[in-house]
Length: 137
Image: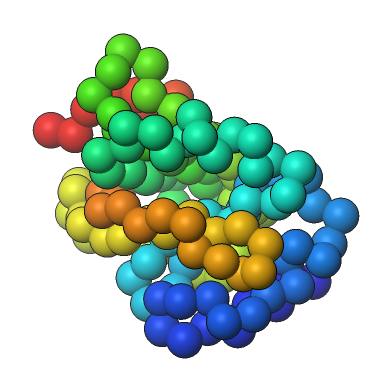
């Protein structure tokens, strides 16, 4: 089981990086999306973060019943922004259900330490299906 010790939006401690995990995970706390990057995926960080202006977290279905998937797009205004798709099993904690199509939050990126290496504005939206690599409206 993954444990995260929080100080509001910050991660103070976690055993995430002590587990044999090879997938990215998303933790949500205090209105902030926190992307946890295992050591085996740290080589993807430059592609993810270079030229990123903001992140878009698109959600399908109903997060309240854990039958959903999500996509994180690191919007760099290119034809092919870096994106990640994940199912409910890789979301640690309760996922916030947006009450509007576009809700502004924050997204932070964390590596082993835990150490925060990036912070972006992030917008949450409900979409009918994934992938949904469309710009914000």
